Image 1: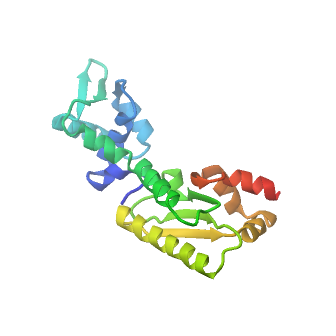
Image 2: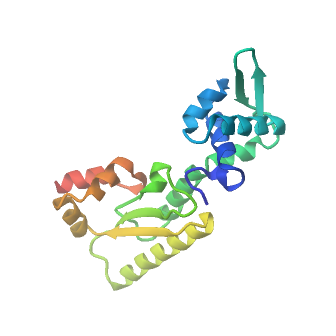
Image 3: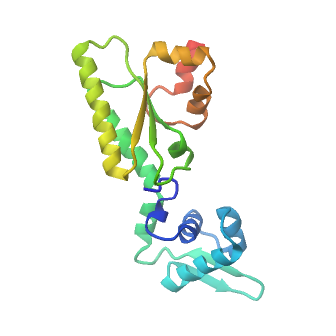
Length: 208
């Protein structure tokens, strides 16, 4: 699934981008404004996408002498489906929070990072999850911990079609990443979407 632009799973890229822009506001916007926010495709391509949406009734167009202004038609029967697709990345986050929150062995920290966290993931992207495991697990607990992670990877694959990569650290390995000033640490702090536990910034600060 295109996690950065979920609507692209069911329609053309420019139509999906135009719907995303209009779903985020209730004010009228010109085609030029919409094209500038989309940041890709030609002006003619954006106009064709908006014209298609107007024909389907998902967008209302106010044709004036100097410009045409567009606004989402939230009364359209299909609009609830559009809004749900537009927020699929948020729904993925909510499902991950619920899944990890139900683990019998809780992580010290869990977060999404990488392209999914930045909103840049596409259908080829991995869903990257950082997990800080608790210290002192015995053999049975370690087996349960590993089973939880395997189950999580399978769930993400079923939910999205995208592979899930888990980056699992304990306190010692996290401290080593901090000590060598691994650029990943800054990415975890700046881009991470917290799912469970203490924020990674607090853990890193405590180590520093």
